[in-house]
Length: 543
Image (cartoon, rainbow, N blue to C red; front, side):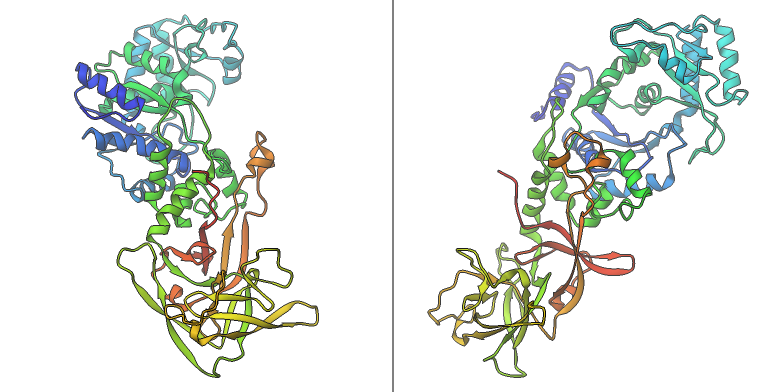
């Protein structure tokens, strides 16, 4: 027996041991009305993880029962995201594959006296549904004859009524303490062109009705859903029992993934795209899998994050810093190092020979077992980051200051002797002395300095736009308020920086750690190559 690591696997183990199920079959059921986001990654890892752990099967099942919001574009994006995460499905299925069977099952329910055609409008149905403490009111059309219901349902199918004029409802119990069981709508009239079936149908099944049927017809053994479907499980079971499903799939609910500072609503993500707040579904700030991939976050880091947060029954919220810690851990091991400066400040070494350059050894990744180095160019003039110099440094300041010393990474120790300012009093150049005997790897100068800073050589440096990202939401300041009130209007910071040429010659999209700055990748933004931040070096996660 497979060792269980969460309550879902415990349930599966018990059913396998008792003989209730022989094979484990799951499905991942997105609706193609938008792009997948990080919350879906947890469901993907659970469903495909069960498949792998139990040597079972998992289908990619598209819930395409609402054609007014669904597109082939979203279908293609969803498949690309799943492949990026490294998962493969056994069958690609759609609710629309089963529309004929779903319709026939509705006829079965009508013939059993378990469904009726109702003339009430959606507003009237909602008004008469009742409350948590008061029973609902039965529809005046609840007791239509089977023959009349069959004829009216046929007329619905044939387009003889307007949208919303009639619907098909299950006949269950208007006094049920579970409002989902109070004669729920299972078919509605909706004239909308379907992305697969075109205009063949003008009636479409509701998700709660189609869900158990599609699971059964696919041979699904365990329907893994998020916690908001727990109250819908009695209806899921009712459909299976009334239609005689054997074996009947079992629905199991788990807590959905909520992450601070991230928009976890497909509806609102769509709004951000449509109103131009972001540059599309794959904007690097977006929590969509396309955005995460475009940002440069490795698929393995995201899967590691989903594995670490585990599977539980109670809703909770995970700190964004936990995800970032997983990303840093992955990139720290795998990303090559490079040098660049976001805010360039010119630094001239006055005692370095004119027109001379040299090549220095630079370590590619200090975490590699077999150390590798490459050559970097050094000369009389370099650029450092403006943040690494201060005219009025605080106590214990370890970076460069007037008459202070630092080491230029992989190069020499320097001392700042003089500051050049422009007419506005802004520092525009530092004049420094270097100590030839302090060369990295062969230092016999006897000099001591605590600060080490990055730099790029003047003549070989490449000018490039560098983008750093903040969160889309300000959680700490606006917790509990609407997304619109919590939006971070300054979620992108743009710098005109300089980087060493090696970075520009590397494979497009490969991650790099810019020393002392963060992890970045080259990204194409509106036909312009920019250096785009993956994650900062600062780690706020308290392990």
